[in-house]
Image 1 (spheres, one colour):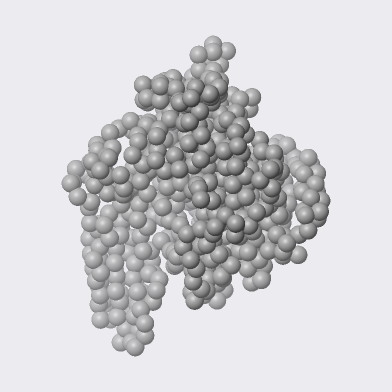
Image 2: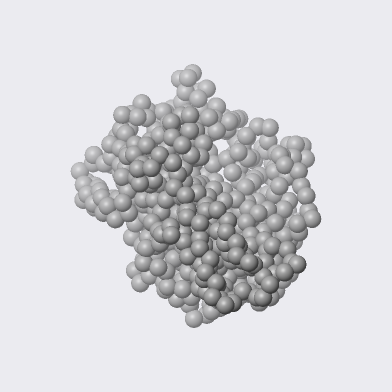
Length: 582
């Protein structure tokens, strides 16, 4: 039975399937009994497929929530390993994606202020992007240099413009099927149906999600926008019972948004199934390591953008070839900062020293497991805060650098969510309870400490409880160490940050135009901008210009009658001008 057919199961079979998965869940070994992935059992040059959904809390049967049936993800979990303790570096997408793409903490490279190319009238700043150290490359570029075919379908949003060398293809048509014969691939498929905007009214699923059924076919066209609600697939009854978190009111408006949330997840699951079916059809399932994860925690108010677990924790499933360790759970702490080194480790490359995470799989897996995860919150759209967090297996320490400012920020985009509008209505009417009013406090405690095991919604701070003074001190010290190590400057005015990124210049620095040096048929390229990636294309006589930029890393041969064009781009700089040589 292939993945896509799972969505066509009879409801009775679906129920039985869920009982089976639920029964297996009771047999998942405890952490100390979890079997490590046998690195020697993995392919030497595996394909890597990332299935990335948005705004995703642990709302899945494989993670303890059986509200909605997700047959494709449930099969993936039954054949793979469930990782319940993955945390993003931010409660919002773009900074988190910067961490994934570079292996660098966003708050250390100028990537933690959300939407630096917009809201310029509010900030008074020009558009800018993160500027990591010169040795930093996007992880996909490193894999391309190593011979991998790398595609992204189709969201970017890294807090910087991706160099043209980052991907062989990044578009709604990007697909592993366009690679060279026998070439290993790293393909990212992004699913947007679960994004917070999927809760907006009028409600309906996105037309563009149909792309995942089109196998990279460039002749396929689709509509923009959303289906009307009456034409949107309904995967569960609107009258279903939903567990409402205590920080949200149990009202008809909130229950409708919970229904949308789960309905969107079910649709995303069907789209996941379409992609996995293509992988099976191509005979690649057992040569591919499949990752499923979300880009941070849930979409609801007091989830997204905050660095409570509700905003940071996202479920991950990894299916290894031949179902290695099928049906198990690995409880180790993982951070998004670990993705880049893990990807390199799985493909046989020792991660470079500048990468700040540690590999949790592969040939170069770290000897010691991660003890802490770290997160940061700064500007979101037009509103700024400064919060840092560190968490171990049980406790979360939060440091508020602006205690005089409340937690709630009146972000216009979030206020399109009916639940947010409901919260504000009930707040103004004096009808929220004390727990629901916490988010609307006028000030914050300078420090907070939460027992995330016994207080999973992080409602009762223990920072002033003498019983936890030792734990508080431990996490304070760890935060100080981390901030120093990554060069973070919490609460630094954004104008000063930009001045540092641009070395005092008033305009965004420009990448120098590369030089082309030809000796006989051998061509070498160089760029005066330290840290610039150089891309080139060889254009043969009477042939079209290739679509993808090759990554320059060593001299190459230029066929007779051909010409070469080149361009350079350092992350955070303006790309160079194009240069060509006949």
